[in-house]
Length: 52
Image 1 (cartoon, rainbow, N blue to C red):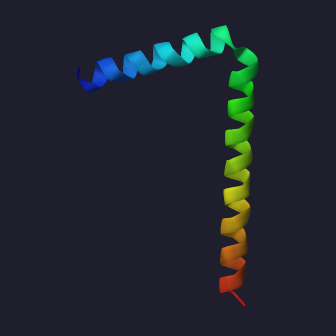
Image 2 (image 1 turned 30 degrees about the vertical axis):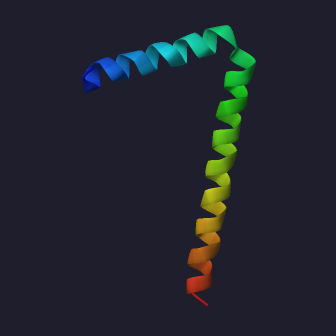
């Protein structure tokens, strides 16, 4: 399989996952956003600590 086919398979899998279990998919998205927020807070704390 080439890269383009792998991308298509991944997109089809995501669509299938969203259609078959939207509540679980929403939890995955919420958890990912929460983790990004925590990473941003940690990065901000690190940058602030550099300035002191």
